[in-house]
Image 1 (cartoon, rainbow, N blue to C red):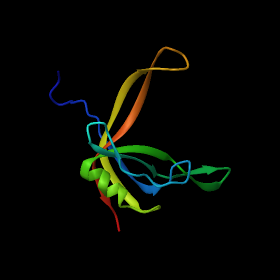
Image 2 (cartoon, helix red, strand yellow; image 1 turned 180 degrees about the vertical axis):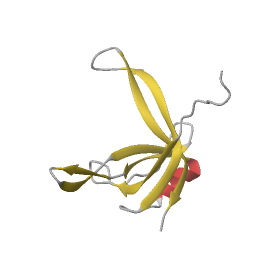
Image 3 (cartoon, rainbow, N blue to C red; image 1 turned 180 degrees about the horizontal axis):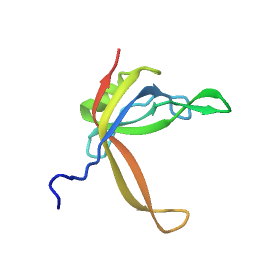
Image 4 (tube, one colour; image 1 turned 135 degrees about the vertical axis):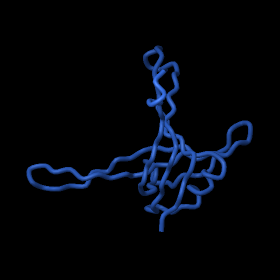
Length: 116
């Protein structure tokens, strides 16, 4: 392999913590082995021009964080600014609807910061 080119899987999101579709903020959960994690939603809005008008469009990402990083998100409030560094993990599972293999992508946080 060419040493000047290395494949990477890096994720960086800067956004606002938002409620889930039921209007709740994320809460710490535990695996059967006792590992704590949280699934949170970040809004990383972008602007778009259409017919000369600029509009802001919400762009929601779900992020999974583990351990101390999960605690940081759990302590955040709705609309609080967060920065997430991490990676994207793909997994294959059997779809209940089609009975065929399907792929799911997860945004995994390695580091989380709150911004003032």
